[in-house]
Figure 1 (cartoon, rainbow, N blue to C red):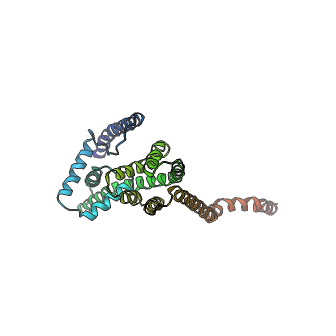
Figure 2: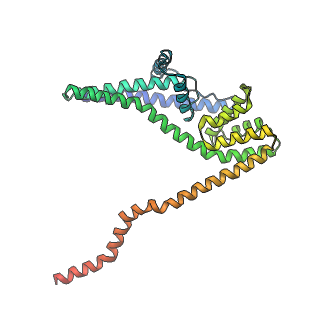
Figure 3: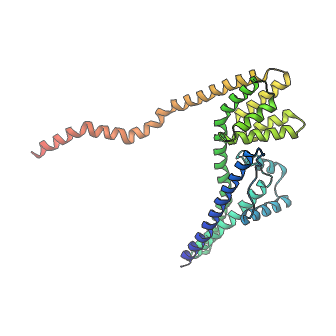
Length: 304
């Protein structure tokens, strides 16, 4: 009876919360499109608003920072991990840490409640609560890891198109800052991840006094080798006075060749991956077709 009551209460809590978050997400996307239509800069932020869970997570994370449980290096490592997932908001790190604590407590409580309803021994009860707490603590890391993989994959897909457009802008006579801004505006719908990184780079170029450091941050922020090579190429071209369009054209050709090499490598591995399906599905069917009539003929002769 307790389990049924717990499931019903959970459903009544999760369903309205999910509907509310979906509505707020759609509202946020619509707001961003309206800002783009009127030429306003779209700020990258983690939605908090009236979401009590995110507000509580942010307060918990801020309190953890005040207690100095995390060193500066640990904070920077966590911030870089969130940046690789496309999350660059200032309050993202406290919310992430607070979410780990809340998910851990929720997981431990759920396992403890379910185990206590079936008369589990105390040692197993506490062990299960500890396992639920650890799983809840790891759940935000799994979500961020999945988002990071998706974000970097989409960003890597849009880099060749970005380089081609940068070459066109450079050949048209635009300087580096104007080229980056123009390409970012043109790719905001086709490749929003590329648009986000270029806009962040442009903000760094405007704010930071060292332009080379601002360009190099574009590669270190995501950790993608293609962006690191692009940033290094731009810095070297500006430092030594070489033509930017020539350097970008060479880099675009190199990245295209690297992509072609990667595809050829995957194609070469294809026969190895096809071996197991062929053994499990194709060969048995082939043996049945070839040997089946002879076996049936022998069985018929033995019966006769």
